[in-house]
Length: 183
Image (tube, rainbow, N blue to C red):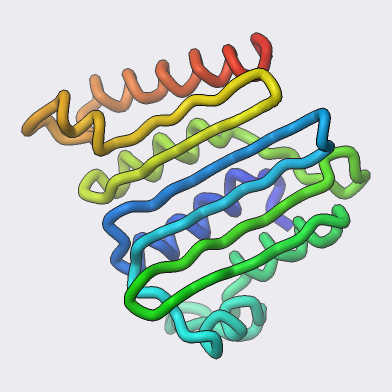
């Protein structure tokens, strides 16, 4: 098991990058009132057939040649289902893929979300030519970081520039504090 769900997000988002997505949407919705945490990663990459989706869920299938077992998606699925939550992948060839994991927060087997802000920042840093739209919603509010909006402001300045990355980290931290009540 991964020790933090943010690592699962990293893994699935990297699948989106490999699928040649130009936009990856990461949505985290956390509600204490509903006792739910839902993570959705949606991309406009090459998509998969239904057969490929079934293979992705199978821990012993991988398209990679560097290792024989692909555990990212199966572990993500297991982490959600072991809390009494659910897991779903919707994909269409040539359109993209949406992966959704929903968790029961109060369950004893609930894995912590972890440092999702660092995950988002690292994804942007390592893939400066791909747009990421990160939305985080709690019972206290919501915020979105959309790199397409940053590009409009920055012009020719790359998203992986140290000053830009520092701004992104600060933006994520400030907004996270505001919707998690200073947590």
